[in-house]
Image (cartoon, rainbow, N blue to C red):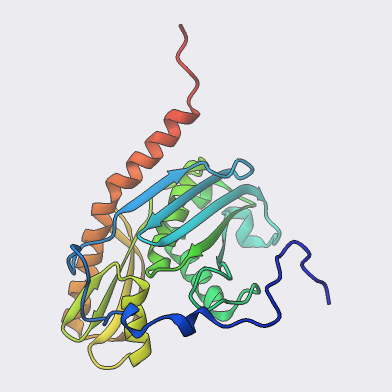
Length: 270
């Protein structure tokens, strides 16, 4: 069996850090600590062009959630069937770093990451002009460095920034937002501790999570994912709240992309 010689091996005898985590560290899902209201998203930090080897790249922080994305291509498609001759293909790879969660995960891609990759691809594809890249494929690689909740929504936003930074033609950027419900309380952009409360109790009646991917200029929803049990009226209000959250995030994305364009632009002639 091959051995990863570049990875620092831990001690043979150790104890899980979860043993030293006091129960008070995980707040209830129905409460939100601090000055952030139930309808407020976390402050977002975004930068483009961090990976010089990639065609486009982006880094995003939302609270303690940290995601980095790289885009490669367009390059010759690996599968040359009739469909690929007329339009390009978008290939997405979503991975969680082993150290991104409280409980260390495996390096091999699991079923959850494969599902997230498929959902990410379905959310991004309506915003990319794939017909301009026949017989080609565009590869999007997302790595979650730290998971503090709402990783799918922020991965959609980060991947959209990387595509725009790489000069890929798009109809519009794609923004993501998540809303979690626990009983009568709805929380926009829930953190890991707020999501962990619902997962620990198990999704029951009036408990669930909704993630929306939006094209803000066209005002069209490109992706919608819902888990749990939510009433129809609550689900409609949740989608509207997520759309409002995406529109509030749009100026942050604009500033990050403008900063990257100005950095790449040649200096003015004297």
